[in-house]
Structures are given as structure tokens and as C-alpha cells.
Image (cartoon, rainbow, N blue to C red; front, side, top):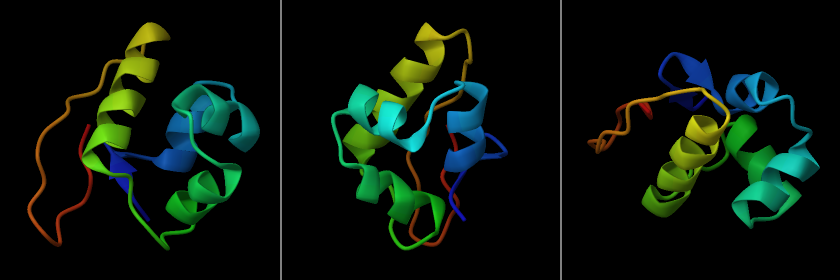
Length: 76
């Protein structure tokens, strides 16, 4: 499962108190994309990670956004 600063995408969405639909809308993506991320079938793009970082920051959740190497977990 994709992690962001020790949190999975699902955990991050939960901290934002958002449904998959609300999270997807806030990011400008589809619900199925959020579902694929949460189930480990795909990973957020660099742009999506940056958008998630901004969204979290706007809700007082600060995450560190760093580039990843192949095979590393997502860290925000």
C-alpha cells in the first residue's frame, strides 16, 4: 500500500475526513483512481503527490514531499 509520511492514501483521506468521492473531486481525478491507489494497484503521479501535499496543507496536515526512487514508498 502506498504510504505518505507513514500514512497510506486511505489514512490521509481519513485524516481529511473525506469520502473517496470528495477526495477525488478535490484532486480533480476519478473515484476509481483513488480506489486503485488505496488498493495498491497504482501510484499517484508526481503531480498528484504535489496536489495531495497542497490539499493536506490546506487542512493543517503538513507532509514532506520528496522525490522517490523506483521501489521506494511514497513519502510526503
